[in-house]
Image (cartoon, rainbow, N blue to C red):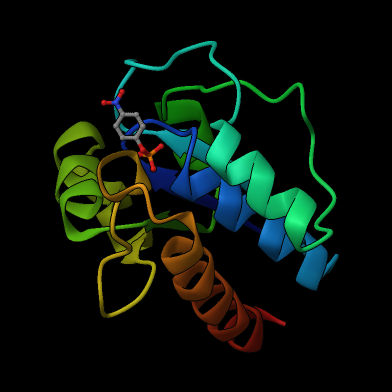
Length: 139
Ligand code: 4NP
């Protein structure tokens, strides 16, 4: 089975949203999420993202906490997917060049960071659309 990891800056808003939306769409892919930074390390999923999961009845792990992307996870995954163009650029800086062929943007358009915009609905719309496209690509 293919293994993918969604990556954003904090791993509390966008990438966990993509992780659990994707898990809800398919069980034919192993899905994880990580951060490019350690800023939120150990912190739970943002309440705005948890609110979206509840509103749209998406099962999720309320005990999941932020973890920074590392080499081991990068080696294990087939696709390393940055939620915005800065995440993709940061992943290329963090990871050895032999792994760069696994790094992809989540969608053509970067997913805006609701940490700054406050608009978790906009994030959810873009995450859902992007996850459907990834599902069609992988399953
Ligand atoms: P995320 O959002 O990358 O979608 O998880 C953020 C979460 C935290 C911070 C920035 C973005 N922060 O600055 O701590």
